[in-house]
Image (cartoon, rainbow, N blue to C red; front, side, top):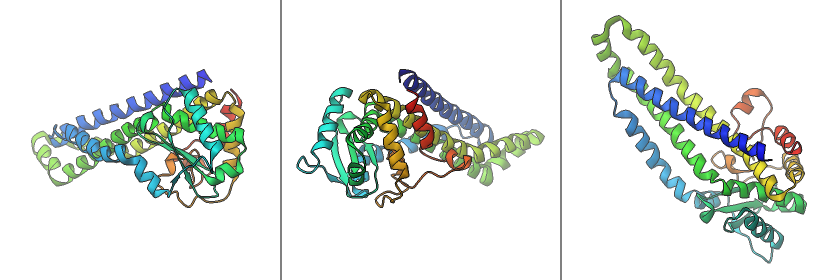
Length: 294
């Protein structure tokens, strides 16, 4: 388990480093082509400001969108007891606990840090999983909270947004004025630089999206491993994931804005290399294989 956790942490860090390298490269290309070195810090500021609102209020927004209601000890005694016990094992405050009235089995965690965390499960999850499997799912979500995954993914979103902004401004600048000014000053060498800039501006947002999704998948692997470490029973989570994936009922409260939060993509994972490349979640078969190899 510790080997899986360490490997996934380093992979996530490496992916963020690649993000930063892409932003730096785009900023350099923009300065060369458009002559506007101030664009890079401006893009960062815009991306950060636009993310602050979702960072501080994401839990309220997601709960409202999901039509979730607070869990009560009268209705959900085992759920609340499980969350309290695993919070103690993880060494974090007890998250707020919410329930979605939906027969599709699923769960998610949100909140910017352990002091403002929420765990939300569907009624279908409590009905269709046994107690060991339910605890395993809660352990997975507890791992997301303990690892500050929401904060980490907010950072990744800021980096991805910055890349998209710089690429968009680069293309607009070349189209409207930058190219004409540089052509007059540099003559024959400019078309090559311009070609490199266009290719970078077109490919960078696609690469940023792929990296963002790759980071999301790595964090799921990490939460699987750390959740298994909390419960000391990896097979419980493997069995829970198999049941959740096999269930064909759609989760009506989910949408594209919230799908990445759930333990299993409620919009359904699709087969095929390309679909998996653009998926927020790793393939269930691979997650189960890793858990059962622990």
